[in-house]
Image (cartoon, one colour):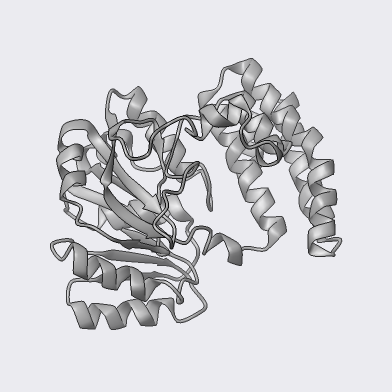
Length: 310
């Protein structure tokens, strides 16, 4: 299952690698209203490889909705989520075996040099403190701080298999019955961010396991589609989804602390955005962020988050 959005530069290589390494799979490309040649290239690969299905949406439905759309239109017992900027380097039989036993599984993501993408391939579930550190840039400025080491699994040997909490949705397999039991991905995380974290959190809470299988590998560029989203929109989407995740999974004090952190971190993030972009556009974006985060902070939990989605 590959969700695309203006991915013309990478989708061909992604589908070619799937045809080489996992010819038994039937790739389904769900395109969210790309304005480039993504759909055309995907259809060319469908003609070439013969087993690629392409679904072209007329509007951007968001990542979670596109995944649910693709899974609902398939009868496969196992679903592999793969980002368009990822290329399989191995077969995925070990992921299927692990998913049979645990419900979900994930392989190792590596960069162009073959090095594991530490801090991204697997993580632990975010805590309020970890997200607050993210909001204030502490994890970026002091990568080895104890909170970040715990959150990003920087203390874990990525060559060792084992049960994990939150693998990257860029290379994640799950059984169809797990997806059905959980009601699919939560489409309120729209258009992007935290939908895969929420899915894994609900899976673990539901008694399923997630097995990390480093023998299954994919190279991953990272951030390909996100880079095409305007900076202000990225900030709004990320903060909105972060608050929604906190609303669903944190207790009241943690949820309120995250909302407050979004408000108070917005000024330095806005200034940094203005400097980096050499533009006043971040003022509009962060004004919107402060408004909805402020509402979430002071209103009852359900009503505050409802304001974000409206």
